[in-house]
Length: 431
Image 1: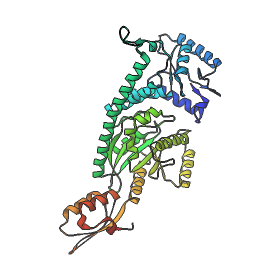
Image 2: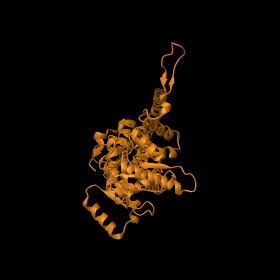
Image 3: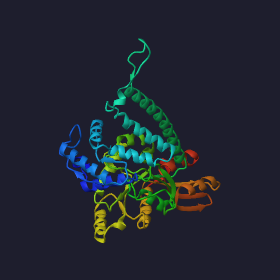
Image 4: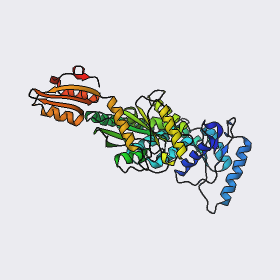
C-alpha cells in the first residue's frame, strides 16, 4: 500500500516499484492499492475508516488462504514506531515501512563480510529509533539485592546499551574496511588506470552492462538490488587505453539514510572515480524522476547539487522502446549539451559507442607532451608505450623525439620517476 503524499512520483509507478520490492524477498503480493492520504494521522497514519477497511480486507485474505501464511502489510512510506505498533494491533499482522523492507532486502542479499557489516549497522541504527515503550517486556527491571541494588535497569535501557555497544564495534570494523579501500585506491593510482564507476537506479541494468563490457559473470537479474558489493574489472578502450570499470549498488527513491551512512565506504568508490556513467532505464515512464533521485544521492555524497562534470549518461533498454520513442529520444539527445549514449546492455547495441565516447572524454582530459629521449633510454620508452598514447615518433642519430598523450596522473608519475627528462610544465604542449 502506498499513500499519495509519500512521494512526488507517479502513484501507479511508485506502487509497481513497491510490489517489486516485496517480490524481491520472494513474498507473494495478495493485494496492492494506492491509498489517498491528505493528512497523516499521528496514531495510525491512515484515518479510522481506512484502517477498519484494511483490517477487514486482511482478515478476509487470511480466511481465503488454505494454509496459515506469514501475513505482512507493507506501507510504502515512513512510519513512526507508535503508528507501526497501533496498526499491528489493529490488523493482527506484521507491518513494515519502506525503510524496514529495504533493510530486509539488503540483509538477504549481503554476501561478503563487508556487506553484512554494512547492513547490520544500518539495521541497528534503524532499530535504535524504534525502542520506545511500545512492548510490555521492555518495562521489566533488573536490580541488585537488598537495599544496595537500587531499582535496576529497565529492559529498554539494556537493549539500547547493547545496540550502542554493537554499533560502536561495527563502526570500528567498517573504519578498518575504509582504510583498506583507501589503500587499494592508492595502489590503483600507482598502476594507474582511470576508474569509471557505473551508477544508476536499481534494476536499470548496471550489472548487465558491466558483464557486457567486461565479459564478466557478475550476478545480474531483473530484480531490485541484485548487486550490493562493488566489483571491478579491466576494460580496454578502442584506442588501447585501459580503464577499471566498477559496478556499484543501485539507488532508489527515499533511500534510507541509514544505508547511505553504512555503505559510505562502498560508495566512496563513486566519489573517487575519474569518470561516472549514469545508467538509466529509459523504458520506464518515470525515468526522469529516477534520474533526479540518483542525482540527489550523488549530491549527498558530496558530488555537488547538480550533475558532476565527469558524468556520462548511458540510456539503457532502448530495445524495449517503440521506433517512434527511440526517434524522440535521439532528437532530445541531439538538443542536449551533455552527451548521452543510447544502448541496450542485453543486445549489445550501442555498447561500442559508449566505449568510444568514454575514450574520447578521457582523451580530452589528457595532456599532450613532447619529449626528447636519448637512444639508451629503453626503460623510459617502454614505460611510455605502456602508459601513454604515442601520437608521433621520430628517430634520429641524436635520440628519439616523441609526441604523446597521457593522463595528468601518468605525466606526474613519469617526471617524478625520470626528473632528468624535464617537467610537465616544460614538456606540455597544446593538444
